[in-house]
Length: 341
Image 1 (spheres, rainbow, N blue to C red):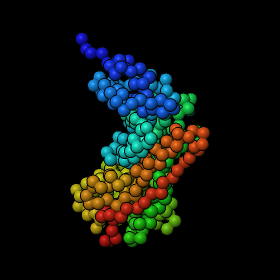
Image 2 (image 1 turned 180 degrees about the vertical axis):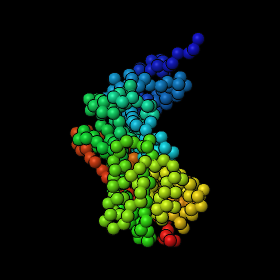
Image 3 (image 1 turned 180 degrees about the horizontal axis):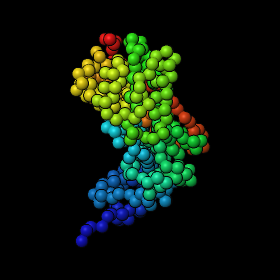
Image 4 (image 1 turned 90 degrees about the vertical axis):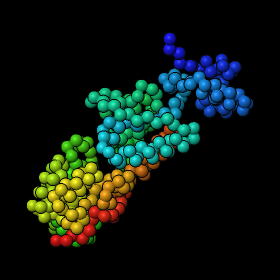
């Protein structure tokens, strides 16, 4: 017969103390006039470890005002691409919440949820961080629970906060950089079809590319409005046929595909083609040659999102909902240079 899971009473009996003492010791609630000796505290902790006791999360959520748990929602769609900005943001989030007074347990939801369903976990949480988007039913449930939430790289209504990169400013930086190098034939490679439909970055990056070139009397390269599919076909059209000398790509995976396709077609980067992408430090650091990129500030986004959520959890009456824009930065590396033709 399988051994039953140890409960709070088992730990209390083995340690020779009450269940409330065990609960206070393990939850670090030794205050408000309650204290135990060092020996008792160490005994409780040691026995809990020996019995492999794990607290019942459902029960803890029902009996306490706080669970010290934060749920990160939207992992299934946001973490699908290798090395994308959300992975860096989550590292920042967990670092902040791990080191907060008392610490928080962070769970990341990677489930594929059907439209119209609630994405919240079964247990009570103190707050949520949403990666780009979630269902309207999830937002309503969060509001109903009273838990604060912050959206990373997506919109939030007056009930929540958000932190997003400034894609308009970032695209302006990319175009300005290429023009300063002497490029006048600048192409744009949009996102693949599978990318988040309707996300503001799709519109902001594309429309700013068009606006910036039109403002300078420069011609856009055909194909800028189409979803990115084949890198080889794209380069044949934009570079070989239309004579583009530079490309701004929506993301780092498209840039990587273009690097590979350029090599197969005998197009030298950056001598014959300059390349810039929107991504973050981690994604760019593993590419060779070193990719010139627009840094979306993913580490900073995660840091700010976690700090805003903590502020809301600790001071719900005083903390105000905010919508923060992160200024994007140009990082000049090896894939952009003066045009050779």
